[in-house]
Amino acid sequence: MPLTDLSLEQSRDFRPEIPEPEDFESFWGTTLDQHERLPLNTSLTPFDNRQRVVDTWDLRFDGYLGTPVSAWLHAPAGATGPLPVVVQYKGYSSSRRVPCATPCAAAGYAHFVVDPRGQGWAHPTIVDTAPDDGPWGGGSGAPGFMTPHLDDPANHYFRRLYVDAFRASQVARSLDLVDPTRVALVGHSQGGAQVAAVAGLAAMAGVPVSVACVDSPFLSCIRRSVDLAASGPYLEVVSWLRTHPYLVSRAFQTLNHFDIVHFARRASTRALFSVAMMDATCPPSTAWAAYNAWAGAAGGVTKDITVYPFAEHPAGEEVQTWNQLGLLDQILR
Image (cartoon, rainbow, N blue to C red; front, side, top):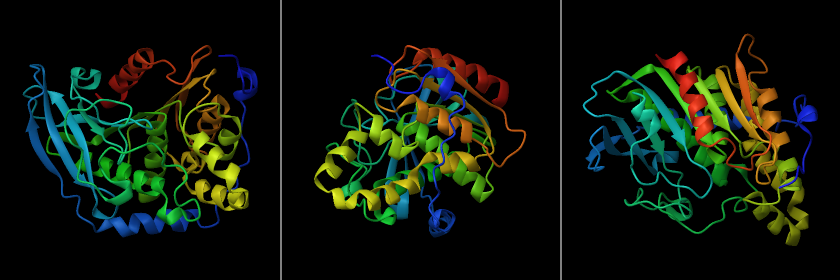
């Protein structure tokens, strides 16, 4: 894969002007207010993961407007807590997957793996997700979440997904096994977008987060990404707008409500990013844009980025997990 975006030298200072929607604060403030009084209705059911060193629970909770979301909770076998917790969000097309032991649980953390509603077509799982909720249900479905409701951010899929992610962080803090003062957020691609969104929403809501790990993030500089991406879900937008050119302006107005650059500016927590400079799915300059915007209004926030010059979208994979475990050990212990 050749370089198809800015060079590394150009990317380091890439800070594009992305006008924020005039109603961004009110849109997300109202969204948070709508959910503040809704119960989480968390349920934990022990699950036989066929392993001896990690305990697993099938976890369910109420996400967007009370609709169900599923997750795995892993912890070191026999742990009583309170443990630091790592909340992990998954990439586009993924699921919470098979409940095998994870590096985070092996490192001594509670590990909360959240299922992205309605997705899961690309990865295996052995347990049904939460009951279906119409077109955006908890169950796996066919690809395609970028273009429905491009005329209205209030009804777009990513409003639901970001709310699910934020409420997942609330669930994590509420668990008896967890120390609510030691919460890490981790995600790759779509999961990285959710990490950034939750960090920004948490700052808006006055909720502390210990550290955010954002890998090869999706939904950053969305208009630029749609112009440049050669693979992945941005092409859904290209395909739709090719035949609906009169919707171009409205479509990007809607998607701009979910651009993580706006959330990154509000974030106030320590961050570790990664970027793959040959990423054809989430153009690398857009990861740099989110990184450079991170904590724009918050002084004294430490942030770092790991660069993989010849990597494609998966970026550092296990190498980046290793880097994250080192940072988590510094911050969460």
